[in-house]
Each structure stands twice: as C-alpha cells, then as structure tokens.
Length: 228
Ligand code: HEC
Ligand code: HEC
Image 1 (tube, rainbow, N blue to C red):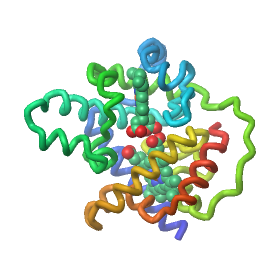
Image 2 (spheres, protein in one colour):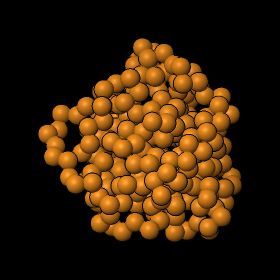
Image 3 (cartoon, rainbow, N blue to C red):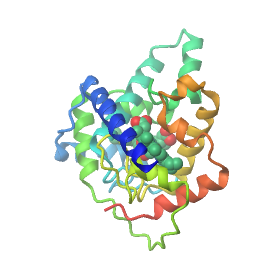
Image 4 (cartoon, rainbow, N blue to C red):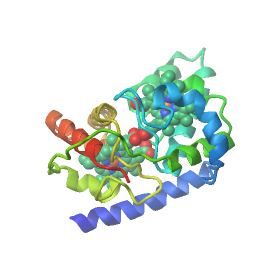
C-alpha cells in the first residue's frame, strides 16, 4: 500500500510540476526583493513568516513552487472577482467553497487586494524569500504519537511532514488551527464532488472520510513536528 502511494506521489509531482511550468512560474526569485515586498504580508503572516494567529498559515520554509502556485491561483481568482460585477452567477461560483481548493484555483477574499497587483516576478521573489526563512518555531512542544491516518499523508507530505516534492506543501510546524480549517474545507469539498471530479482533487479525496477527531489529531500532530 505504501509503495502504491509513493508511485501516486511521483506521478502527481510530475503532473503538478508540468502545471507550474504551464503557469509560467519561475521558482528562481530574488529573496532580497521578496523580503521588501513581504512587509505588506507581515500583519497576517508574521515578520518572520510565522503567523501570529493560529488560524493563519505560516509561510516560513514552505516550498517555493507550492507558494507560487497558491499565490498565482489566488491572484487569478481575485482578478476574476474584480471583473465580475455584472455576472452574479459566476461570482457565486467563485465564492463557493467548492471552487476554493479544486484544480480550478483557490479563492480567498482576504487575500484579494494583496495579490491582485502582484506581477509574476513579485510572486517569484516573495516565494524565494519565504521558502528560505527558517520555520523553526519557539514553541516548546511534545510531539504526540503519530495518528494511524498520518501514514498515508506521509507518503506525499514526507515522513516528518517535510515533503520531498517542491509542489507538495510541508505540514510540519504549520499552524494547528489553519491545518484544521484546511482539512475541514477539503472534507466538505470531498463530500460534494462526484467520484469523477474527486479524481482531479487529491486532497478532497484524502479528507473525505476523516472524522472530526481524526482532523484534530492530524492537525495537532503535524503542527508539533519540527520543520527543519
Ligand atoms: C489581511 C491578512 C493577510 C495578508 C495581509 C496577507 N495574507 Fe496571505 N493569507 C491570509 C489568509 C487568511 C490565508 C488563508 C486562506 C485560506 O485559508 O484559504 C492566506 C493564505 C496565503 C497563502 C497560502 C498558504 C498555504 O499554506 O497554502 C500564501 C502563499 C499567502 N497567503 C501569501 C501571502 C503573501 C505573499 C502576502 C503579501 C504579499 C500575503 N499573503 C498577505 C491572509 C493574509
Ligand atoms: C497523493 C498525495 C497526497 C496525500 C496522500 C495527502 N496529500 Fe495533502 N496535499 C497534497 C497536495 C498536492 C497538496 C497541495 C494542493 C494544492 O496545490 O492546492 C496538499 C495540501 C494539503 C494541505 C494544505 C496545506 C497548506 O499549506 O495549505 C493540507 C493541510 C494537507 N494536504 C494535509 C494532508 C493530510 C492530513 C493527509 C493525510 C490524511 C494528506 N494531506 C494526504 C498531496 C497529498
């Protein structure tokens, strides 16, 4: 079973890298320029990329290609949303949870005004900056026992929650509340999508059958792991 997941991950990484290239994203940004641009992100994501609020994602040490994909996706949604004052239907579609994490893109209204004016180069610079920051947190943590469900997560997100693929995010040291929120959202989407649609959304499939206590223990476990 483990081997199966490894193969699945390799195949997925290939597909996702191809997509990242198709977006025209270059993971070789300028970290110093990125650091200056990141000042506008600090209120929510922290001056050092460690979010002050547990429901906001930490960006420090996250994979550059993954960051580029998320920011680019949020920017394209923001653009669509801004241009769609007349079409209620499309606006509704973009706002729906289902749109949020499918391959179509990612939608987050809080991020709209921040990302809408970013150029591709800015996004690459920001990703270079954040991916180089240390994700070591100051929290004194005891790592709980690995939940049974975590075995399959580790096939893609890495044995210690640090993924080996540049397009699969690290989970180690990520904010606990943020991880819970993402898993709950993926679960909702997984329950709504048809079997065929789920095939295109790996995390919706992964989270669909998780129980509340699975989500709680997975979030606690991964957030307590040291990320480097
Ligand atoms: C007003 C608060 C706020 C500001 C300012 C902000 N963000 Fe965010 N950001 C959020 C929230 C909230 C989320 C989580 C969205 C979700 O749950 O889908 C997020 C998510 C993200 C993610 C996805 C993280 C992941 O692990 O998937 C990235 C990347 C990101 N922001 C980058 C940035 C960058 C770069 C800037 C500055 C140019 C910025 N943000 C400014 C609130 C903010
Ligand atoms: C087959 C590979 C695979 C498996 C197995 C997998 N994931 Fe994921 N996961 C991904 C990919 C790829 C993404 C990024 C999706 C995107 O680009 O939007 C992701 C994203 C996430 C995110 C969002 C991270 C962020 O920073 O926003 C969380 C949380 C997550 N996974 C948790 C889990 C958990 C918990 C499990 C086990 C129950 C799991 N994943 C199993 C591939 C996988």
